[in-house]
Length: 88
Image (tube, one colour):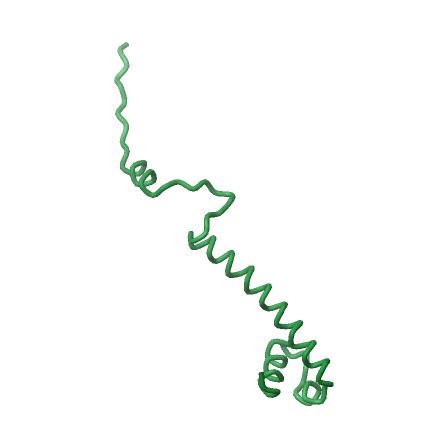
């Protein structure tokens, strides 16, 4: 990864916490450390969000919700009951 790409990523994902001159003049080891810590953080956040997205879209079953097959859901939606008239 190029130096300017790394600087850009730190500035962008640092959300205003760093300025260009500070990051450019950082020792190489510190700039790499900062970059990889930010990358680790945003990968973790992104992974959590994508897992929740998959659960919300139904691609991954939600452990708190029963997994009812679509055929059963459709049959239940079309099911009608008859009432029996009571004799008095």
